[in-house]
Amino acid sequence: MKNEFLTWKNFLSKEKNKEYFIKIFNFINFQKTCGKKIFPEKKDIFKSIKLTPLKNIKIVIIGQDPYYKEDQADGLCFSVKKNSKIPPSLRNIFKELKNSIKNFIIPKHGCLNKWAIQGVLLLNTVLTVEENRPNSHINIGWQKFTDKIIEIINFNCYKVIFILWGYHAKKKSY
Image (cartoon, rainbow, N blue to C red; front, side):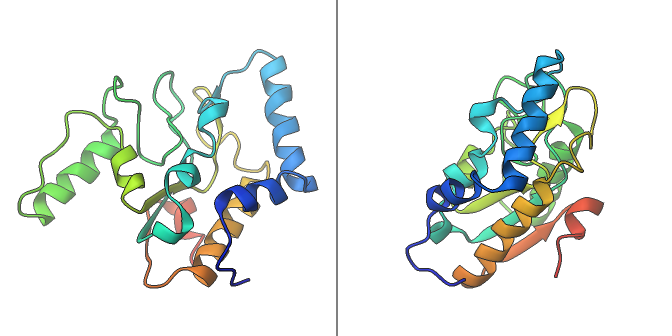
């Protein structure tokens, strides 16, 4: 699977035509027609791979699923929109960084776009969630998609650090 010309855009264009991928979006679209709110917004579902090109990946942080409250999920695991309150899980991450890194300054917001741009792939095992229902999309096929992302990284990147936070993330270890 080693491919020096592979990009996330090429990968996505191939995956979107596969049956499992079509089923994921059929499920999401059906939920929306039933009046359910799905997070993150459609434009942000693939934000993690849009902001972090394969060739730039240094660290992969894997979380569970997106935050499930209004105005939180932004498409990056553990990240929230700039105007959102920092959730407890991200506050704990910031505290650990402060304790581990001498000059680390805890940000005033929880938007981790800068991390992604610098080579930290912030990937959830599941890329969507229904409002107020954590793990609600755990069985719709996202794991197959995120497994493929991890496989691509393993075959195409060198010296990448993987951090698996949470039970569902730890299931991704090989």
